[in-house]
Length: 147
Image (cartoon, rainbow, N blue to C red; front, top):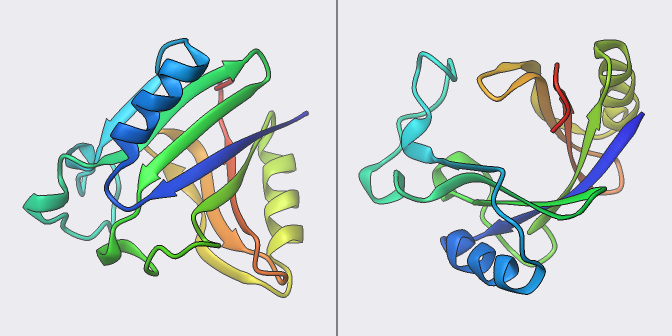
């Protein structure tokens, strides 16, 4: 089974935007992580986050209906390409098995660019990011328990 959600990228206004979305859709955040939670221990190879960015949101999740979660992050210039209109969203796919996760990651990345290879991270058993050959950004995840 594939679960599809929308992942929005902001330039330092994620918390403000998601508080607005929460006022529109209702509900509660099911996840809220700041960059200060990223360490070498739980995210090997991560770059040092500067003090000005540590309080920014690395990830937030807001269920907006039983089948859809709106997610977001503050895009840091130190961690990737600059945020511009057109790359301010990502399609996020979550799978029930490692095999499905690997298969879709490989298929979508064919002819495209792998931004982050599939790997275990502190929030997911497998997580990877890619841009497909048509310029669409994807995040691929496998969770032991559903998100």
